[in-house]
Length: 253
Ligand SMILES: [Zn+2]
Image (cartoon, rainbow, N blue to C red; front, side, top):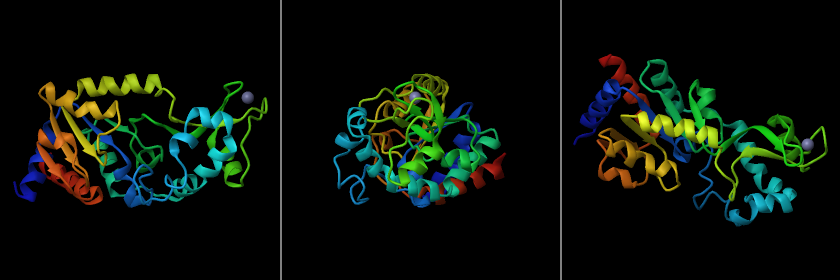
């Protein structure tokens, strides 16, 4: 299928969907300057073994090492701005064409672009939790402490606080997860945007939607298993494809 036909087909599926959701991963934020921390070449995962630094067990033993390791990521995420792909998904929501964004990212860029229904399956940096008394605090002050090279602590009990992101060895946030999966069960269209679909439970959602007769659109620089049954595949940059889809939807609604 030619590219313009694929854009048209994808846009018409989006327009006709009863309950469309987007699944987003690191690829949607690379254009905003947030590297894919799992991929080689970003430098951040190479100096350390993430399993050793970014697991909950390692965090409890050596929070100072964790905070040193996380410093460059925090800095990058604070400076990052939403790009046209984030903005496009927010526009689809405003147009009533997208019910929810399910994201593996922790960078807050969907919300900053204007998306309102966002499920952050791997957590976020807006809050930290004390590992001793479980009080929850705003994340910014704690992360600023971390950027100064200190381990942030609970103002109430002095315990070490941990960002509300999911580390290796931790459960995904169950309420977020079950609400997100409810959207996935209702969905008759899923837009895969910048995820290679290798991490569960997000990875199984396109297959689930497809098995129930729904459609899948894949926009990702790398092949995914869902390409085989997707209604349209774009192996291109999201910040170009998504605004084009939004424009095509505007024309046809
Ligand atoms: Zn505390």
